[in-house]
Length: 249
Image (cartoon, rainbow, N blue to C red; front, side):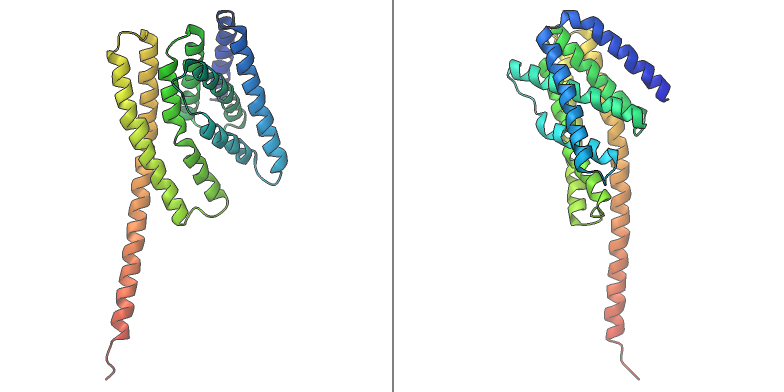
């Protein structure tokens, strides 16, 4: 599996190099600077958290990117966001392949994101759609990373963990599935985007649904588990109240 994705990344990199002549030199410099910046931030986190795992530092980088990568209707700012995010996704995809920490679904998500950003930068259009997808993807990312950090520090099974899980499921369902469906419909009926842009939008939305199915399964299992725990506590309290009022003969 890792060999397959390595070949995919190699092909992606070759395609990226072939497109560089179509992109402004300034954009290429921005992407390379972004990649170097994320690598430097990751290295800094590794040095500051030597007692933690490499995944801890990588998720700190992911959390930071999720907070920063909010799209803007301003075209110049959109380009800056795309360059910043492209560098991040190249970094994170390489990290995931090197440590083999993610499955095919996450690798497909990262690959599609990289292709979409390169396409928007190379064509000089569809930045609005790509930034909207990035916004929908990254708005839930900080909550996902907070959940992981809570689990690693032993604070997940608490009220805070429940709140984070609820907000994550609600945002993912409302933004990536609900709002995402509306944006995808608008893109499909509009004559402006090219056909491969529409295909990319459908692919990204399909990936979101794959994630959504797993998230709903998790939420259902957790809800059932908490319901059974609540019923058990209620039964114990009822028995204690009943035993406490038993008459002695």
